[in-house]
Length: 273
Ligand SMILES: [Zn+2]
Image (cartoon, rainbow, N blue to C red; front, side):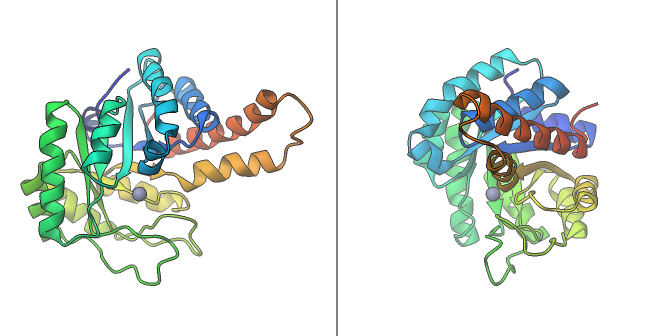
């Protein structure tokens, strides 16, 4: 069932769980996620990076995602992850996305607010929800991770932009962690309490289960998994003999690994009964 980002996160807020947001890269990873949705009946967010829309992959995959949204009974949101600017957000909306992320987190807060506000004003006209980012969430390869989101800035950002969801920097990063991250759980709780916003955790791949659960208790409502969707697919594919069967049969096994990974996270986040 087609849901906007706001609608799906409202469900999570009400139920006290988090909705998993799986990045998909090709039809096989998408099939893995969709089969997990069908098996669990859980609400999920299917998202793609800005670059996939830029390279044309998005154009190829969007019609399939839209069909899935009409086909499955559980709530599904189609989301743009890390939209680089307003043009990218508009393009994703044209392809049918029901949520877009505008990532202006590397800009000073005043400019971030202005960029995000502009996106919110336009997306509203298309009934599309917007996720913003405050406090830059970098890469696991970065040497310093010091731009943690403050409560004061978060309150101002939410009030002045009108975003539907807010990605915060509370100790995670994108990519493979060299060692398990330690999340600022108290900070999540303070930001949630003071903004009442739907909070988003990026870099969910590799975060220990107990910290994921503590983050949800503190108010996180969307958790992104990109790296581990890739890894589950590639690790499974590496173990296969590509010449053992027709390509679709071989690829189905790698797709199955994505499904198993997605089901594990859906259960961990409390998104299925
Ligand atoms: Zn991210």
